[in-house]
Length: 341
View 1 (tube, rainbow, N blue to C red):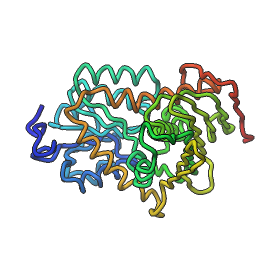
View 2: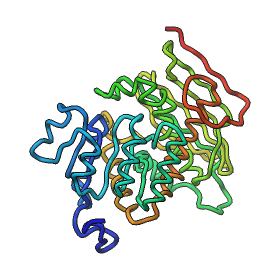
View 3: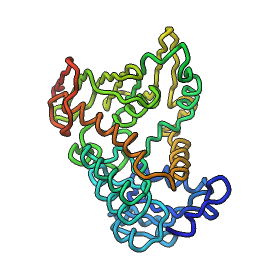
């Protein structure tokens, strides 16, 4: 594609990779900071519909209000897509058609069929497509992974529990689209679900899981605010607990081995500041993105982003409430409750 595609040394480019960022909401600051700290990246262009979001970058970076104009005007080596969820599919598709590798915030898209189309575009154009599961790069999670028994060991992972508890209004800043189910794709299941489902898959050795039980609580407007989801598959059992109304913040993982041993990881541990863990996690995302370049395009989308997206759809379908269409779950305990206004 460009001179900076040529590898140097241990797979690293001779010059920094030119990065564009589409969407300057809450999460963009972590990408910007990570790219500034990592020698393999240089942010050269940004895009947002809002002039007030672009204003701090004018005179320093190329600024655009349309992602297509950004793709046409800038010789990018990669694009971060951090626009609201409902726009992921369109922006990712345009970048892939332009031959630009994409790192997209979760979820990959709103619906599995959109995700599958993106995977097909990635394959057709031979362009990497990575869903940014930043919790995979959390140092406490990585430490936990190192403590798990290796494949073939007498002791095996029996079950994984992931908790993602927070009061959503305290975490979105000016990104009020999170509270719009049409733009977000739903509520806590659509937003926090992908990260939690991905961790379950990661800790169960990447094995596929299916939804076997769902208990969802919706508010008076119909938005899912709490959910407990049971998963099962060849790698073991998973339990995901989500809460958008929790007074505080808990993000942790508990792994049970079949000999009774319990191993845990507090993803916020050692970093008490607000969203403090995200700084190092997004450095990990951009390192993974740099390493992914030059490999076959669709594998990460299919195995990671698409798998999580299909589980989100399965939860909403199983609950039989408002949400995304998807395959029916196989479980028998499927409930939904509505909170009083």
